[in-house]
Length: 78
Image 1 (tube, rainbow, N blue to C red):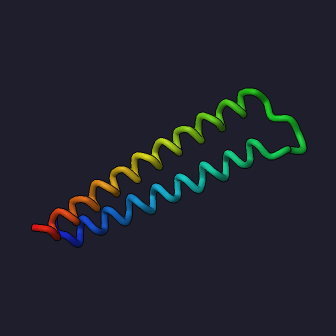
Image 2 (image 1 turned 135 degrees about the vertical axis):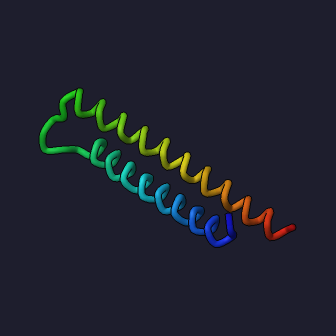
Image 3 (image 1 turned 180 degrees about the vertical axis):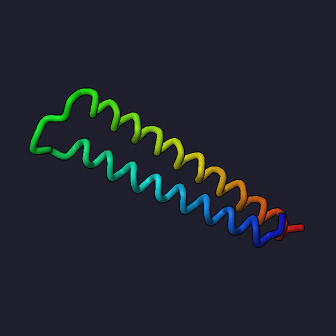
């Protein structure tokens, strides 16, 4: 892979991670803020599961982005 492709992938994964992080924060805030009506237990469980999945995905994409960043740094050293 060329340095440009690696840099492009690194940037894309970072954007994916930030997007998932933002959506998970938005969902979590919607869950903990007082609401006009009570949420059913199924809704709370589903939203918390979704938040956890999105945070996990965000973590994995940040990790992948870091891997590509290290690849670019290793190429620069050599």
